[in-house]
Length: 100
Image (cartoon, rainbow, N blue to C red):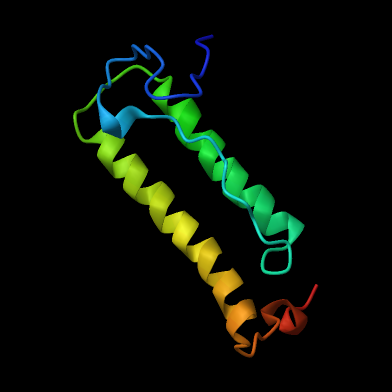
């Protein structure tokens, strides 16, 4: 298995090159008051998914851009959860109405 570089492109040679292939290092500070432990785990898992995707052999020229876009969309969805809490938006527990 290839080692995931931690700085720049780290000599990464998967067939991807340039800025678009720089692995994510989850260096951001996650405010625990805004994000639950589960939300924090999701954010770290998304960074891990990106890093692992970079290790896959290149198959199509658009794969990297499309995967990066999807990761960013998922990060935005999780991030807005923290914004809602921080700004005091009423948050409805949609799970309470589910029958088991």
